[in-house]
Amino acid sequence: MKLAFVVSLYFEYGGMQRTMLRIAQNCVARGHQVDIYTGGWQGEHPQDINVIELDTQASTNVKSNDVLAEKFHAAVSKQQYDCLVGFTKLPGLDVYYAGDPCYAARVEYSRPFWYKWTPRYRGFRRQEAAVFAKGLNTQIMLIAHQEKAKFQHYYKTEELRFHLLPPGINVERFAQLPKGDDRRALRAELNISLYENFILLVGSRFKTKGLDRALIAFAALPDELRNTSKLVVVGGDKQGPYIKQAKQLGIAEQLVFTGARDDLVRFYATADALVHPAYSENTGTILIEAMLCGLPQVASGACGFAYHVIEAEAGLITPEPFKQSVFNEQLVKILTSGERVDWHRKGPQYCQRTDLYSLIDHATDVVIARALRNREAL
Image (cartoon, rainbow, N blue to C red; front, top):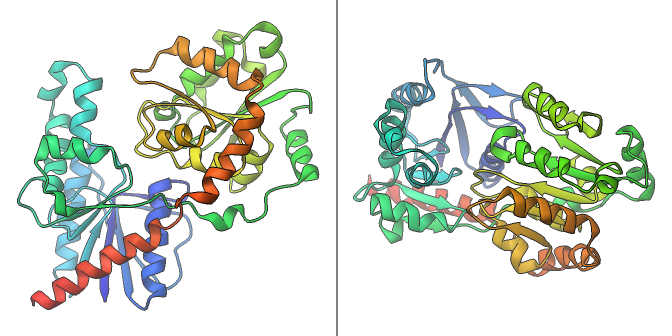
């Protein structure tokens, strides 16, 4: 089969982007050809996959996506592809991978009433409808299963168009967890003593991941606990606003930024707690990755994978609508409770008995099945 994938931007630390590349590589491993069209590619180009960069510069993200749609369809019209697979909401797709939550629902619950009159809202709603509207033929791969009802509420999407996927944790990354010496070395690198609490936050978009919430909760810790703890932030984003906030809260000396890292497993295995108070999180892969490493966690209920933490009994979830005071109390509990031993044990046990890994194969099956149907229809 000849397959065309399309995404607005690829950057190597994006969770959805990594998943897209793994699906593409799995298609190639099964003997198919994959071309990836994108408005920009940050990182090394993959082997055996053609990457075609399109100039999609525009004054807004909405317009940039419209340009991407126009140039993508112009390019693929000159080829004979068996399936068009989108990781950005574009019209005319055969298969769409839903890496984002329902935009219409998110605006309904998080924006003032007048926001629906803005060009940005109308543009994103139009682009979402081009994938999910009733009567279309686009198949939808969904990993945040709770979002299906929202899409159906706003767009009347037919039930048979949805393919519910399991999480796609790359278990090979966790085959060998770091041992004591490696953990001590990481603490030394970060200037965290063996007697200090190592609190971890991971994310490439600090605003969405709720770093401001984490800083407020850290500053609210009891004095003795706060003075013997450090908050380590892993991810590539602008640090300035949060350094300023930490200074205002009096905790700047206990805040550590590492930038983006490839050795996340070392952090999961070394930290004492993961915090993830995200404002919006379609899935939250790091919640499961932390469980695999036995890392207790406190996260917001906005995370699509929060239910895994609840079912595993591997930490605490702050209910939606989010209340800062509740999260503050849960952070204290995650650091001091005698339940830490159970949280540490139950996370890996849950991951052993639950299918958290087969997304890539399932997604590849959906793509190839649609490609076959398209061929048969010719």
